[in-house]
Length: 474
Image (tube, rainbow, N blue to C red; front, top):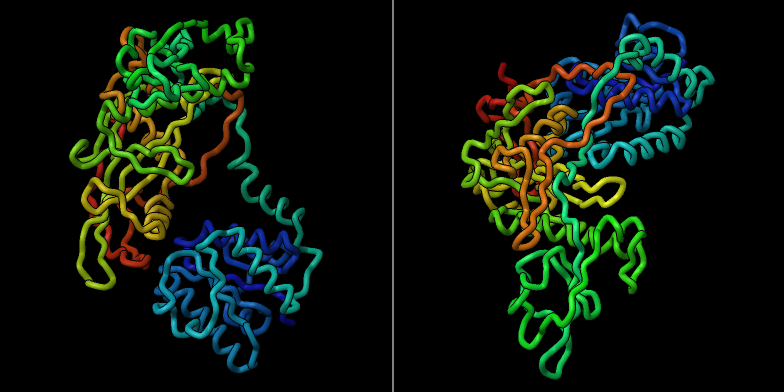
């Protein structure tokens, strides 16, 4: 009786995806088997895999990757499935699911004429297509395979080792507090000495913007003398406590508390922009309009930055690395560099801070980001797929240490006599419980195995970056 969806994959390289896929297929009610889950519905394992494929399998799902496309084990299972499909004249017996950037021209010969479901474009979309295919082809459901069966299986296999632990643990947020913050909001009323429109036409020396005929800023009027453009002058200035207007205890008289929060947030954003300008930092404009700042080879040399780690000890991380790639058209090889970057969004409530987000951009020359969006996306997926929480966390701390030149805060002048300071250590919090981290004993994230990547004019050949200094020192 053919009643089972068989999932074949490269072990252990594609285990994470395969386990997820098997559990999702089981949750949808389809009988499924893979060597990671066995049979959730009862049987422990099939002693004869070949016999199982020949006699019990109704659909053979092949997890297609650069690894499984070249590894003997899954290829042998694929050949058995191809023989069954040919001998029994089954239509769509083999369903390949593509999980990386393996080019179609390099698919195994058994898959050459088959349409692979593109999980590499997104797991959710790929799963929807696969489940739809199983339904359309009439694969029967089983009451033994259900969300409750998956939950039971998960508890039995991971409940003891990866459940919530009754231990206190400290966690870090991505909120970096503004330790020294502007205290005064100035409203400078503008006028003209000649007829014309009241409009600031010059770049301001400090954070500020025009709201109707008022210049909003953290800086006093004297800082803008002669800097507002022809014939524009400040005729009156009023100052307000930022804490007072944000809390509603004071009023500007011409806007709501919500507007005031927006004003302060805008000035904080401009202050971050000033930090970028003053330090001559390179940036990449993101789709949402924010700027991702990143170190160049000229600025950072070998790309290694020292910082204080979670344990309080000195540590170091690479913020720049490379892989050797080639242009498909010319076959010329070159180094494609990756750069760890940051973008920032100001927070006014519940505490003044900057929410820092991590990004990875790519260059050829160590300075200018590649223009091809598809190449950037593909390269980012390849480079970062094995980065875990601690990798992102430590690189973010290292990047903040780089921005502050190793100091405990990033100082930004917001007026001739005032500045604000952003801490380089984020806000932390203590949790009364902890959890068991998954096994992260993968290859070092800057020493990934050789792989190939086809993305327009880039194809990844080898990983030749030297060992970095991603270690804590005693």
